[in-house]
Image 1 (cartoon, helix red, strand yellow):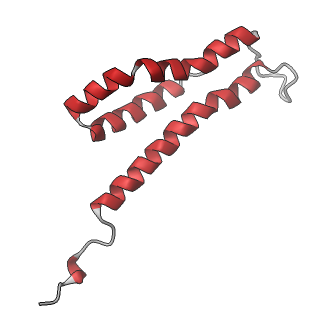
Image 2 (tube, rainbow, N blue to C red):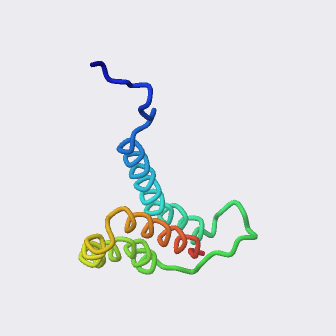
Length: 108
């Protein structure tokens, strides 16, 4: 007996999962690189707009700030694994992206 393909959804659940995972990774990557782009504008006194205040950070301070993402990434590996086991990867990925996005808005 032939299968009735007229009742199948156009986009399956796995396609939605792949799309949502891709979008989460794009957001996470853009948040990782936005500080390295933004730190140039925040600390460059020769910028085009003289009305924007410049932060007096030396190279050491810039290095600490730029490495903060990777230190957080390193430190949270085991707790994130435990939380993923407890709450499920779907909810952990969702809330991690939301919290990280909200905290990124606090960057000067």
